Length: 302
Image 1 (cartoon, rainbow, N blue to C red):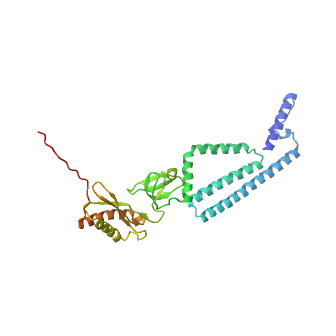
Image 2 (cartoon, one colour):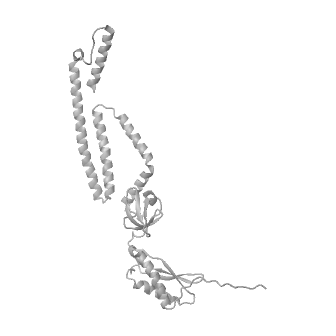
Protein backbone atom coordinates (compact mmCIF):
# COMPACT_ATOMS: atom_id res chain seq x y z
CA UNK A 1 0.00 0.00 0.00
CA UNK A 2 2.82 2.41 0.86
CA UNK A 3 4.51 1.52 -2.42
CA UNK A 4 1.44 2.31 -4.48
CA UNK A 5 0.82 5.52 -2.58
CA UNK A 6 4.40 6.72 -3.16
CA UNK A 7 4.20 5.83 -6.84
CA UNK A 8 0.95 7.72 -7.27
CA UNK A 9 2.28 10.72 -5.39
CA UNK A 10 5.47 10.97 -7.47
CA UNK A 11 3.54 10.48 -10.67
CA UNK A 12 1.18 13.26 -9.74
CA UNK A 13 4.10 15.55 -8.89
CA UNK A 14 5.77 14.71 -12.20
CA UNK A 15 2.62 15.44 -14.19
CA UNK A 16 2.17 18.71 -12.32
CA UNK A 17 5.78 19.67 -13.05
CA UNK A 18 5.39 18.72 -16.70
CA UNK A 19 2.26 20.76 -16.99
CA UNK A 20 4.03 23.75 -15.52
CA UNK A 21 7.11 23.47 -17.70
CA UNK A 22 5.43 22.31 -20.87
CA UNK A 23 7.90 19.39 -21.09
CA UNK A 24 7.39 15.63 -20.66
CA UNK A 25 6.77 14.39 -17.12
CA UNK A 26 5.96 11.17 -15.22
CA UNK A 27 3.44 8.88 -16.92
CA UNK A 28 1.71 5.89 -15.33
CA UNK A 29 1.91 4.06 -18.64
CA UNK A 30 5.60 4.72 -19.23
CA UNK A 31 7.83 3.30 -16.49
CA UNK A 32 10.85 5.08 -17.98
CA UNK A 33 9.39 8.36 -16.79
CA UNK A 34 9.08 7.28 -13.18
CA UNK A 35 11.38 9.31 -11.00
CA UNK A 36 11.90 7.81 -7.55
CA UNK A 37 14.65 6.46 -5.34
CA UNK A 38 14.97 2.66 -5.81
CA UNK A 39 16.64 2.23 -2.43
CA UNK A 40 13.75 3.90 -0.65
CA UNK A 41 11.18 1.73 -2.38
CA UNK A 42 13.22 -1.39 -1.65
CA UNK A 43 13.39 -0.54 2.04
CA UNK A 44 9.68 0.15 2.14
CA UNK A 45 8.86 -3.08 0.32
CA UNK A 46 11.01 -5.06 2.75
CA UNK A 47 9.37 -3.36 5.73
CA UNK A 48 5.92 -4.06 4.30
CA UNK A 49 6.81 -7.68 3.66
CA UNK A 50 8.17 -8.08 7.15
CA UNK A 51 5.02 -6.55 8.67
CA UNK A 52 2.84 -8.80 6.51
CA UNK A 53 4.71 -11.93 7.61
CA UNK A 54 4.51 -10.90 11.27
CA UNK A 55 0.78 -10.16 10.92
CA UNK A 56 0.17 -13.58 9.38
CA UNK A 57 2.16 -15.24 12.17
CA UNK A 58 0.19 -13.30 14.79
CA UNK A 59 -3.07 -14.46 13.24
CA UNK A 60 -2.05 -18.11 12.89
CA UNK A 61 -0.50 -18.38 16.36
CA UNK A 62 -3.35 -16.41 17.91
CA UNK A 63 -5.94 -18.67 16.29
CA UNK A 64 -4.08 -21.73 17.58
CA UNK A 65 -3.92 -20.31 21.11
CA UNK A 66 -7.61 -19.37 20.94
CA UNK A 67 -8.46 -22.98 20.11
CA UNK A 68 -6.39 -24.24 23.04
CA UNK A 69 -7.99 -21.82 25.52
CA UNK A 70 -11.45 -22.70 24.23
CA UNK A 71 -10.80 -26.41 24.76
CA UNK A 72 -9.48 -25.71 28.25
CA UNK A 73 -12.70 -23.87 29.07
CA UNK A 74 -14.80 -26.73 27.68
CA UNK A 75 -12.98 -29.30 29.84
CA UNK A 76 -13.22 -27.10 32.94
CA UNK A 77 -16.97 -26.58 32.52
CA UNK A 78 -17.56 -30.27 31.89
CA UNK A 79 -15.59 -31.19 35.01
CA UNK A 80 -17.83 -28.78 36.89
CA UNK A 81 -20.82 -30.72 35.45
CA UNK A 82 -22.24 -27.68 33.67
CA UNK A 83 -25.03 -28.36 31.18
CA UNK A 84 -23.65 -29.17 27.71
CA UNK A 85 -25.76 -26.43 26.11
CA UNK A 86 -24.12 -23.86 28.36
CA UNK A 87 -20.67 -25.35 27.76
CA UNK A 88 -21.00 -24.91 24.00
CA UNK A 89 -22.36 -21.38 24.34
CA UNK A 90 -19.57 -20.11 26.61
CA UNK A 91 -16.91 -21.84 24.50
CA UNK A 92 -18.19 -20.22 21.31
CA UNK A 93 -18.34 -16.78 22.95
CA UNK A 94 -14.76 -17.09 24.21
CA UNK A 95 -13.49 -18.29 20.84
CA UNK A 96 -15.18 -15.39 19.02
CA UNK A 97 -13.77 -12.79 21.42
CA UNK A 98 -10.25 -14.21 21.15
CA UNK A 99 -10.42 -14.18 17.34
CA UNK A 100 -11.54 -10.54 17.33
CA UNK A 101 -8.56 -9.68 19.54
CA UNK A 102 -6.18 -11.62 17.27
CA UNK A 103 -7.47 -9.92 14.10
CA UNK A 104 -7.12 -6.47 15.67
CA UNK A 105 -3.56 -7.30 16.75
CA UNK A 106 -2.68 -8.44 13.21
CA UNK A 107 -4.14 -5.28 11.66
CA UNK A 108 -2.23 -3.17 14.17
CA UNK A 109 0.99 -4.83 12.99
CA UNK A 110 0.18 -3.74 9.42
CA UNK A 111 -0.13 -0.16 10.54
CA UNK A 112 -3.92 -0.03 10.39
CA UNK A 113 -5.50 2.25 12.98
CA UNK A 114 -7.75 -0.11 14.95
CA UNK A 115 -9.17 2.56 17.24
CA UNK A 116 -12.07 3.28 14.92
CA UNK A 117 -12.67 -0.44 14.35
CA UNK A 118 -12.83 -1.04 18.10
CA UNK A 119 -15.28 1.83 18.50
CA UNK A 120 -17.50 0.43 15.75
CA UNK A 121 -17.47 -3.04 17.34
CA UNK A 122 -18.34 -1.56 20.75
CA UNK A 123 -21.17 0.51 19.28
CA UNK A 124 -22.53 -2.49 17.41
CA UNK A 125 -22.42 -4.59 20.58
CA UNK A 126 -24.28 -1.87 22.51
CA UNK A 127 -26.96 -1.63 19.81
CA UNK A 128 -27.42 -5.40 19.77
CA UNK A 129 -27.61 -5.42 23.56
CA UNK A 130 -30.44 -2.87 23.59
CA UNK A 131 -32.28 -4.71 20.79
CA UNK A 132 -32.04 -8.05 22.61
CA UNK A 133 -32.60 -6.73 26.12
CA UNK A 134 -35.52 -9.08 26.86
CA UNK A 135 -33.74 -12.09 25.36
CA UNK A 136 -30.59 -11.32 27.34
CA UNK A 137 -32.68 -11.19 30.51
CA UNK A 138 -34.08 -14.64 29.74
CA UNK A 139 -30.57 -15.87 28.96
CA UNK A 140 -29.21 -14.58 32.28
CA UNK A 141 -32.11 -16.27 34.09
CA UNK A 142 -31.43 -19.51 32.19
CA UNK A 143 -27.76 -19.43 33.18
CA UNK A 144 -28.75 -18.95 36.83
CA UNK A 145 -31.14 -21.89 36.73
CA UNK A 146 -28.60 -24.15 35.02
CA UNK A 147 -25.91 -23.27 37.57
CA UNK A 148 -27.98 -23.16 40.80
CA UNK A 149 -30.57 -25.79 39.74
CA UNK A 150 -33.68 -24.63 41.64
CA UNK A 151 -35.55 -26.95 39.27
CA UNK A 152 -34.46 -29.71 36.91
CA UNK A 153 -35.91 -31.83 34.14
CA UNK A 154 -38.47 -34.26 35.59
CA UNK A 155 -39.38 -32.09 38.60
CA UNK A 156 -43.01 -31.40 39.45
CA UNK A 157 -43.11 -27.63 39.88
CA UNK A 158 -45.31 -24.58 40.06
CA UNK A 159 -43.38 -21.74 38.44
CA UNK A 160 -44.10 -18.82 36.16
CA UNK A 161 -47.84 -19.30 36.72
CA UNK A 162 -47.70 -22.89 35.40
CA UNK A 163 -48.03 -26.21 37.21
CA UNK A 164 -46.58 -29.38 35.74
CA UNK A 165 -43.50 -31.49 35.07
CA UNK A 166 -40.38 -29.80 33.71
CA UNK A 167 -39.47 -31.30 30.34
CA UNK A 168 -36.45 -29.16 29.47
CA UNK A 169 -34.59 -26.02 30.55
CA UNK A 170 -33.01 -24.12 27.65
CA UNK A 171 -30.98 -20.92 27.70
CA UNK A 172 -34.04 -18.77 27.05
CA UNK A 173 -37.13 -20.71 28.15
CA UNK A 174 -38.38 -23.55 30.36
CA UNK A 175 -40.69 -26.16 28.84
CA UNK A 176 -43.32 -27.57 31.23
CA UNK A 177 -45.81 -30.38 30.56
CA UNK A 178 -49.06 -29.72 32.44
CA UNK A 179 -51.24 -32.51 33.92
CA UNK A 180 -53.85 -31.97 31.18
CA UNK A 181 -51.32 -32.69 28.43
CA UNK A 182 -50.37 -29.14 27.44
CA UNK A 183 -46.86 -28.05 26.54
CA UNK A 184 -46.19 -24.64 28.08
CA UNK A 185 -43.10 -22.60 27.19
CA UNK A 186 -42.29 -20.17 30.01
CA UNK A 187 -39.60 -17.47 29.56
CA UNK A 188 -36.82 -18.05 32.05
CA UNK A 189 -37.17 -14.54 33.47
CA UNK A 190 -40.81 -15.40 34.26
CA UNK A 191 -39.67 -18.48 36.19
CA UNK A 192 -36.97 -16.76 38.26
CA UNK A 193 -39.00 -13.55 38.67
CA UNK A 194 -41.50 -15.19 41.05
CA UNK A 195 -41.83 -17.93 43.63
CA UNK A 196 -40.79 -21.42 42.54
CA UNK A 197 -42.54 -24.37 44.17
CA UNK A 198 -40.55 -27.55 43.57
CA UNK A 199 -42.64 -30.51 44.67
CA UNK A 200 -39.90 -33.02 43.81
CA UNK A 201 -36.71 -31.52 45.25
CA UNK A 202 -36.98 -33.18 48.68
CA UNK A 203 -37.75 -36.63 47.26
CA UNK A 204 -41.17 -36.92 48.95
CA UNK A 205 -44.34 -34.92 49.08
CA UNK A 206 -47.35 -34.69 51.39
CA UNK A 207 -50.89 -35.02 50.07
CA UNK A 208 -53.40 -32.81 51.90
CA UNK A 209 -56.96 -34.14 51.77
CA UNK A 210 -60.04 -33.15 53.77
CA UNK A 211 -62.99 -35.44 54.60
CA UNK A 212 -66.15 -34.60 56.53
CA UNK A 213 -68.51 -36.75 58.60
CA UNK A 214 -71.84 -36.01 60.22
CA UNK A 215 -72.10 -34.64 63.74
CA UNK A 216 -73.91 -37.80 64.84
CA UNK A 217 -71.15 -40.15 63.58
CA UNK A 218 -68.39 -41.71 65.69
CA UNK A 219 -65.24 -39.60 65.40
CA UNK A 220 -62.82 -42.36 66.47
CA UNK A 221 -64.40 -44.82 64.07
CA UNK A 222 -64.01 -42.38 61.17
CA UNK A 223 -60.36 -41.74 62.05
CA UNK A 224 -59.67 -45.48 62.18
CA UNK A 225 -61.29 -46.02 58.78
CA UNK A 226 -59.24 -43.30 57.12
CA UNK A 227 -55.99 -44.49 58.68
CA UNK A 228 -56.66 -48.07 57.54
CA UNK A 229 -57.31 -46.87 54.00
CA UNK A 230 -54.01 -45.02 53.66
CA UNK A 231 -51.97 -47.69 55.49
CA UNK A 232 -53.19 -50.35 53.02
CA UNK A 233 -51.80 -48.34 50.10
CA UNK A 234 -48.25 -49.56 49.40
CA UNK A 235 -47.39 -46.22 47.78
CA UNK A 236 -47.78 -44.36 51.08
CA UNK A 237 -44.46 -43.85 52.88
CA UNK A 238 -43.96 -44.98 56.48
CA UNK A 239 -41.53 -42.15 57.23
CA UNK A 240 -42.83 -39.52 57.78
CA UNK A 241 -45.88 -41.21 59.23
CA UNK A 242 -49.28 -40.25 57.80
CA UNK A 243 -51.57 -37.97 59.77
CA UNK A 244 -55.33 -38.19 60.34
CA UNK A 245 -56.76 -35.52 62.63
CA UNK A 246 -59.90 -33.50 63.18
CA UNK A 247 -59.39 -29.99 61.92
CA UNK A 248 -62.67 -28.07 62.06
CA UNK A 249 -66.32 -27.97 63.00
CA UNK A 250 -68.01 -27.12 59.74
CA UNK A 251 -71.51 -25.81 59.15
CA UNK A 252 -72.86 -29.29 58.51
CA UNK A 253 -69.90 -31.64 59.12
CA UNK A 254 -66.95 -32.48 61.32
CA UNK A 255 -63.90 -32.14 59.09
CA UNK A 256 -60.73 -34.24 59.20
CA UNK A 257 -57.39 -33.82 57.44
CA UNK A 258 -55.80 -36.91 55.92
CA UNK A 259 -52.12 -36.37 55.09
CA UNK A 260 -50.04 -39.26 53.74
CA UNK A 261 -46.51 -38.84 52.36
CA UNK A 262 -45.66 -40.30 48.95
CA UNK A 263 -43.08 -40.18 46.19
CA UNK A 264 -43.78 -37.25 43.81
CA UNK A 265 -44.53 -39.65 40.95
CA UNK A 266 -47.36 -41.24 43.02
CA UNK A 267 -49.03 -37.97 44.02
CA UNK A 268 -52.06 -37.97 41.75
CA UNK A 269 -52.58 -41.72 41.88
CA UNK A 270 -52.78 -41.75 45.68
CA UNK A 271 -54.93 -38.61 45.67
CA UNK A 272 -57.60 -40.10 43.42
CA UNK A 273 -57.53 -43.62 44.90
CA UNK A 274 -57.72 -42.41 48.50
CA UNK A 275 -60.81 -40.28 47.87
CA UNK A 276 -62.56 -43.22 46.27
CA UNK A 277 -61.46 -45.72 48.93
CA UNK A 278 -62.54 -43.49 51.85
CA UNK A 279 -66.00 -42.96 50.33
CA UNK A 280 -66.48 -46.72 49.86
CA UNK A 281 -65.22 -47.49 53.37
CA UNK A 282 -67.53 -44.90 54.95
CA UNK A 283 -70.49 -46.30 53.04
CA UNK A 284 -69.63 -49.87 54.03
CA UNK A 285 -69.40 -49.01 57.76
CA UNK A 286 -72.29 -46.60 57.99
CA UNK A 287 -70.38 -43.32 58.29
CA UNK A 288 -72.22 -40.48 56.65
CA UNK A 289 -70.58 -37.87 54.44
CA UNK A 290 -72.92 -34.90 54.89
CA UNK A 291 -73.84 -32.37 52.27
CA UNK A 292 -75.43 -28.94 52.67
CA UNK A 293 -79.18 -29.07 53.24
CA UNK A 294 -81.74 -26.32 53.49
CA UNK A 295 -85.23 -26.47 55.01
CA UNK A 296 -87.82 -24.39 53.16
CA UNK A 297 -91.05 -23.49 54.98
CA UNK A 298 -94.05 -22.33 52.96
CA UNK A 299 -96.68 -20.17 54.58
CA UNK A 300 -100.03 -19.88 52.90
CA UNK A 301 -101.40 -16.38 52.89
CA UNK A 302 -105.19 -16.20 53.02
